[in-house]
Image (tube, rainbow, N blue to C red; front, side):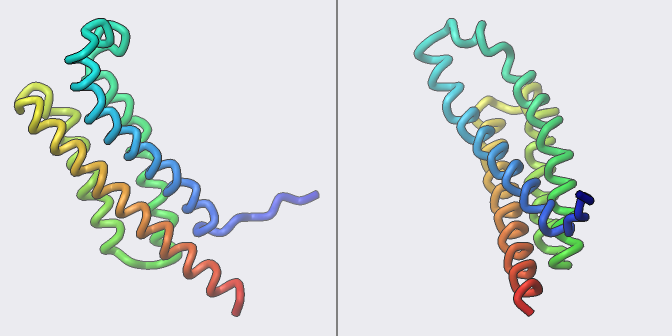
Length: 140
């Protein structure tokens, strides 16, 4: 049985779903960690420094987002979606790399949450447009 070559739109939806889930994880982390650290100081020892979590998330978010948006753009050709995703990734990157050292914790969390929301919204738009166009061309 020969392997069929999947269209970029078909593969892009998987990247978008992963990226949306990663953004949600980041939002939960940014909201939950301050609460956990306040209520249970031992959690800080178990979870490790927050910087490590954000760096690890960037290693997952960057390639997933680049892959999802690149494949999606090949289908829908909407640069605005890619630009919105780039804004979200940029906000997450700035918060993760410089926020810990330069900003108050509340500011770093706010930028991280805002970046995650923007990135998740861009991936949702990407997913929606790829799916819309993929279904439209399949019926035609």
